[in-house]
Length: 238
Image (cartoon, rainbow, N blue to C red):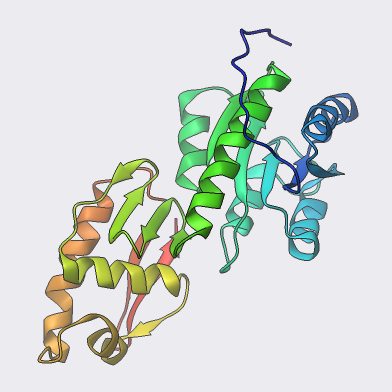
């Protein structure tokens, strides 16, 4: 494993639940040992199916995710972790280090990507940054779906670290779609919940079209706005 200069980080991981998904026992044990030194709660699993199951019943705060896993590959696990209202932070830890691999991970909604061989101190430092962000977000309403985050209290939205330039109506629409990610929203519901009181059914399409174009300009959003003919719209994972 590589070595690097270590910058002290006073942020604590005490009480943070970390799921380590790694099929190489030696690597898993090293990562586990470094996190336990920071008083994190750790659980190790060695395959993709166990990762999905453990995430459901244990509800980790952060998942350290290998990609080359038995029973279910890591990208499939990541996509599953990005479904539902409660989603853990995900740091991919993989030997796959090509730009296309990283882009695929970020498109599916990973928070960080570390390439093997690695310095365990780096994983800990990145987890501390992620845990700190989670604590700040928990202090107010932040919703996410794919790689999109909507900060309701600050009235801003992001694709990864990149802010989205939205009108107030587009922001309300995006917040509604993210909150109900993967579920159909009818035109009537859109009018009632996200548009002005004087809006009507036909006014939905122009707003949706402009929002869709702004999402499409972000290659790492990990989502798409799907039209359901005669029904409404749905925000889907790509």
